Image (cartoon, rainbow, N blue to C red; front, top):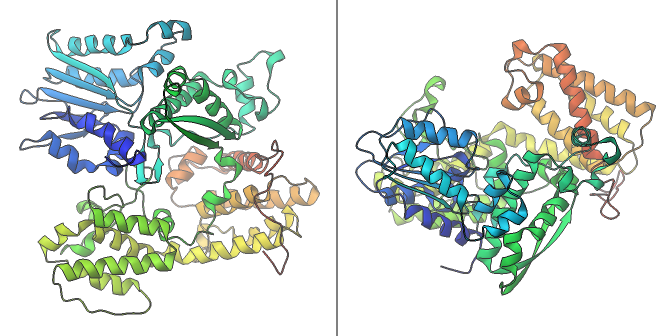
Length: 569
């Protein structure tokens, strides 16, 4: 294997899993499926299973069990082996005919001891022993109905989804978010009056909820395994309240202390609370095609970091809206296609214009290799031009198979370039640039008053106007980039006008998106009353104020922009 990195770490973990899955039913949870998706691809898993039929199933309570001809099961899980997870294991195994069960957990035995409230001193005495895993192995045999059947429980650190050789994400921790000032009230509710927290700066691990401590320890366990794979003795740095607690936990994590004694290399690990600068996450400054693809195409179900690519262009089907799911979607992850991986890395690394030209070059080269009748054209790359190249592969099954990854990325590019949301990208960028110019000379109230005409109910909106989710993006950008501001009468009045307009926008939506359902607590527009909408908007602005004040405790880096004026950004 090449130089140790995020990809080799992930592949090494999956090799251990693949060694266990021959002729097995394989159950995966969403986070592990996403790690597989980006790491080595489901094809590798299916090849390792072998046999005429490959059964991959989602790990969930109502998952189909195994029949008499399926005696072996492998469960690959990102979560702790306790509570609902163990109940689901029991339910699946009890309705099956398994004689051999393997449970792979992405979390170490040390984390399971923490979850079972084993004191640190007692845990230290158990070095080399795995009582939690051994007890579960006995339970697995009990559920299979014969204590002589085979059960294995093992830890494999399937922490990462490697998006690129230098970039990896952690799907299992997609919901782990930095603390906001409003969370202090929640943390104080479980503390005596004399030990109440005054600000986020006072938060340490003893102040956190048991659930958050456990989630944090799960992340630390995975990061420690990554450092072990890299062979490094890490030095931890942190910016932000939650980052500081996580960095301290990694520094004091007992297995990590033992590992550092023999590590040959050195590394710096920097933790940063995302709330300190949300402008990078919601802004449109980046001239990057991959960012636009991920922003505008629909999310791949069950995934946090991939999108659905409509593959209808390569078929003879003419699907209607009601049966659009007949054709399986394409995606961005192409773990086993070297040419497609090279193109994907180009999309991540280059500017928009260069990336589109790179897509054209890959399509032209693929068509040339297959001797397809391609008509070369230079100059500006258009969606129509890329579509004409893609359609050359349409009736050639061999060419489709050979270049399926390139074609998926090509279609993702075409669909992004033609997407109405892409046309709005420049509108967002124009507003953000105007804001950066004006905040040096204008107050927050002026900015909010500039924003107010953009708040339009669905009945008054055109395709060029902003919908509710887009308005939330703009508000998040405004409050994050401006940071702390002076509260005065003008600001109070401007904010009330914006809140009133946003309540109206929410109330008049004919259909609530999943995000609006989460924000309002209503599953449909008919259940959303004016009162519920007002409560949701008030809570939203409370969070926006916390985001604006996120850098207030910092001595340096209190601002993420250099004030401009009406002539310079």
